[in-house]
Image 1 (spheres, helix red, strand yellow):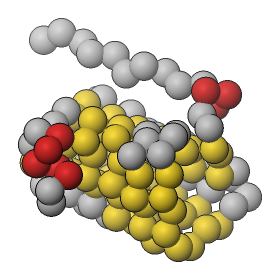
Image 2 (cartoon, one colour; image 1 turned 180 degrees about the horizontal axis):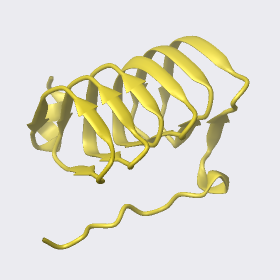
Image 3 (cartoon, helix red, strand yellow; image 1 turned 60 degrees about the horizontal axis):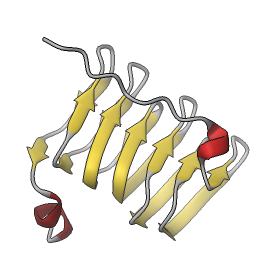
Image 4 (tube, helix red, strand yellow; image 1 turned 90 degrees about the vertical axis):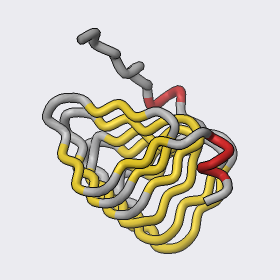
Length: 123
């Protein structure tokens, strides 16, 4: 089976970063890219990409283009692009996306549903 590498993203390429010392509760809407490095609880509704760093903890229902996880996420994910789970990722929740990459070592506990971007938007 061919290896499909996940493109490494530099923090400097991200439009907005919630730093390690941020503990945010609420709803976030964004259209560009966002990286969570601290704690987040609530709802994420985006047309941009979401990056969850290795030491981050997110408890939320997530809607975004691409969801790239290195840390811990609890909640369902609806991605119109794809979901990427790195070896350090831990996800407790269902995934609905047209494309999913899970690297060896990641933890995923949920149901995976692969649908076209239009089907994901209509959920």
